[in-house]
Length: 136
Image (cartoon, rainbow, N blue to C red; front, side):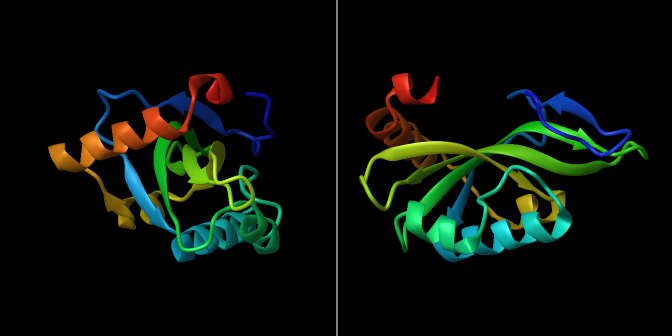
């Protein structure tokens, strides 16, 4: 990943065995708030603006978010998580995936999917709507 980090930032991969690995559901209104927070914190993985987000993401849809990397500041504390975010395109109605930086407190405030039934639904949605050729 070739991204700019503040001086002293270190990136660590989040693996499924880690306690902070999770699958979160993000409502459309929450997504706009996440983007505004990323902008105000100077995070780089985000939509350019709320207008751009609204033009690319299907309104009133839900997104699936999962952390991929922990980005630690010079003090060693986690500054933000770089997350995969799966969403439905407003234009094509196809599944899309992008990256978004999310502050730790915000990530933990989002609804976590941890029920077996819900996790199966998430897997079905991802496999049915996000062909691997578009993700990788």
